[in-house]
Amino acid sequence: MSHPFFDASVYPWHRADAKKLHSALYGTVTIFARIDLLYKGIGPGLPPLEVAAPDVVWHMALDHLTAAQSLGKLCKHLLTAAELVSIRSVVLEVISAESVIDQFVLETAVSADLAFVNRKNLRIELNKLASSNPSIRVLLVRGESKSGLTWTRHLVERKAAELGEGPIVYAFDGNVANVNHVLRLLFAALGKPNGVPAKDSTEDAWYMDALFQLQVLADDKKRHLWIVADDLGPGPEGPKLDPAVRKFFEQFALFMANPDFAQWFRLVLIEYPRGSVPTKWKKGFWVEEDTTQSSPETTDIKDYLLEWARKKKKSLPEEQAEKFAAEILSKARAAVRADGMQSLWENLHNELLAVLKTL
Image 1 (tube, helix red, strand yellow):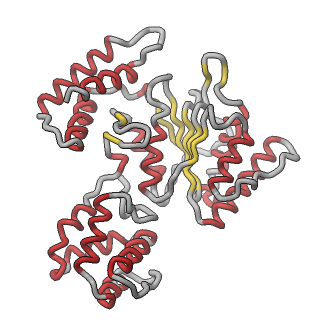
Image 2 (cartoon, rainbow, N blue to C red):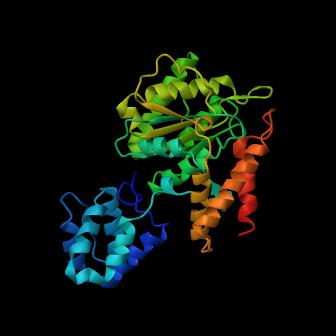
Image 3 (cartoon, rainbow, N blue to C red):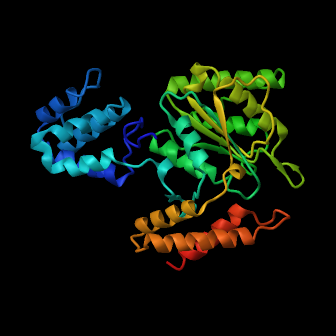
């Protein structure tokens, strides 16, 4: 799994353990010459530090080391430095930090608790997508309605932020109606909202022209863009989005076979229809997750309950968590409706929330 500090491109200042390491460093190593010596000892090619107050210097150092993906080297050195024994526990906390992909309970602006029960395959494939040298650049998310497909974006959003590459661009039925709207979102995310090329040729040629210009913009700004396109499947009355939107994203995915283009983008397509993919797609650069291919298990629910209790600082014995988990899964299965109006995943979420309210 990727590490939230050592595989990131931006130091995760939003994390409590990140702030704690910063405080420990500027409170312990205060002389500029000593900070500079430690910093330069990590390796060549780092930007020089400017003389300033210790907290400012360490802020610069942590930013530079993270961008160079050399923070892990600093932490290893800090553990072996006899004069820095007082901060070893803080350093160990950073070394053992858990990626958002490994977390069961996520907190977002939408909801304090999002129950990512199971979704093991999603976590595995998303981790590949997040790699600093990915071979996988496109993730298709498939499955039945009300099985948690749209919630995928929350995990993607948190992972992009963890890597310092957020916020994501999220296109869905409600904020885009056609390809032009999608392009305006993408160009705006790269700081050029009026950069969408004029459509003066065929649709395919227009898509290619826009994608080439997006690559130039991303390369110029050195900006990684995570893109989540939702609602790409059918609704009760036909396609949720203009079919041309899916066609555009299929062209986008085709471009991801080119490493020069793909280095700047990560693409997640939600509610992508089952069946074959476009014939021109190259093998090896895309993967898929299907929510119906991994049914929830008692162990998954128990793990979620224990993690939730730990985060909320509540007492929940493992035996009790296992008992709750079995009851939740049993009730969720019993409430599944043949007409699809009540899915297993939806029932599971409702039953889980009901139990959490009692703890």
